[in-house]
Image 1 (cartoon, rainbow, N blue to C red):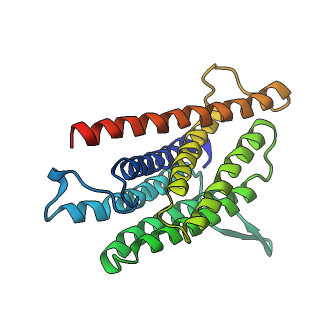
Image 2 (image 1 turned 180 degrees about the vertical axis):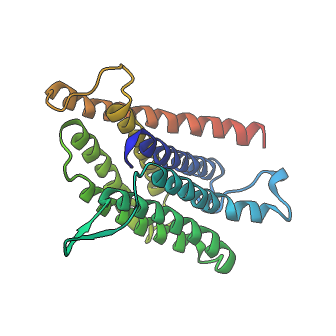
Image 3 (image 1 turned 45 degrees about the horizontal axis):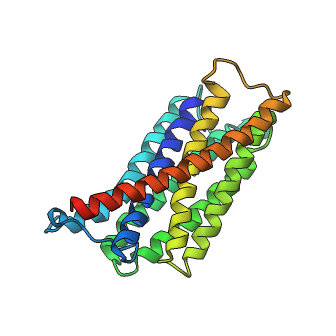
Length: 257
């Protein structure tokens, strides 16, 4: 995820995925139903309602992964290869770019599981989707830990905070395998996805396009300390956003649907 766009586009994808989960959990809390099978508005029922529900999230994941891969390949200068053999020596090239592509491949595979499981094994689809999410988060977390190599200062601190969110998402994903309809886990997952997405966008602005116009300094302790402060502001702001989503959903399903 090198460059500003490499942080912006994945961050937006993860953030909107968290918003989707926030909408699901709000509907489940208001209507007192299992979070994986929320009720639908009357005009959403019909012969195409199930098809629309099946493909929405999975297809968005697949489309997002293609866009992210295209953006990553567009930014690579020169011939994109895995191994270079010069003077009888083997050198791995573009290691970070290959890490990025592997991350995007997990999004693609998770989307494929969402689409295929709903069509082939609809009764087992929730378990398969949650298993795919947990596996994807494990792969992403492993790659992000390796991604910290050669990082320092502001970049290191911001990515450490991002990895902490991914670790919590992995724990929630694993716990969901045994409690798939636990509202507590779904609330935590929605919030953590939004935090991960918004913070990834914030990392892009801090490292490549600072809003203030002044570059963040790796040797300035105040800058490094404020990275954590901004992260806490993200957590507090997104918690308030979760509450607002619940309030809006309460009004929508009681007075509109």
